[in-house]
Amino acid sequence: PVAGKLMLTVTAKEDVWLRLRVDGKVIAERKLDPGETVTVAGDESASIFTGNAGGLSVQFNGSDIGTVGPRGQVRT
Image (cartoon, rainbow, N blue to C red; front, top):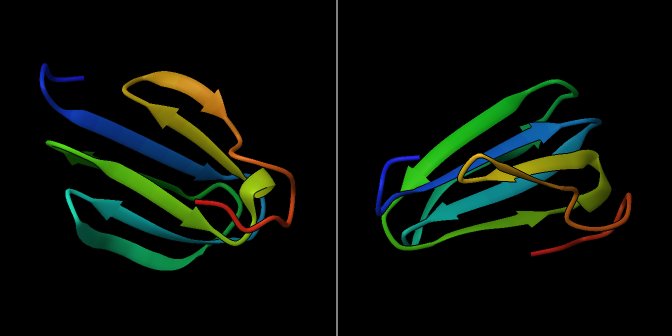
């Protein structure tokens, strides 16, 4: 990651709906198919809202943080 920047990468392990918000702006709002990856960069903040927390693998600034909750659970 670049100093002072946020890097967020999400990879769908199964069908998953998500909304990615970076620096207060919605960057992506759609369904991902298994194997699809989205990477976004920001300056101040990044958030994920998903309809299938267990179906999404997340990396933040190059560190793997895994899933953000159980399969089928809505999470922010």
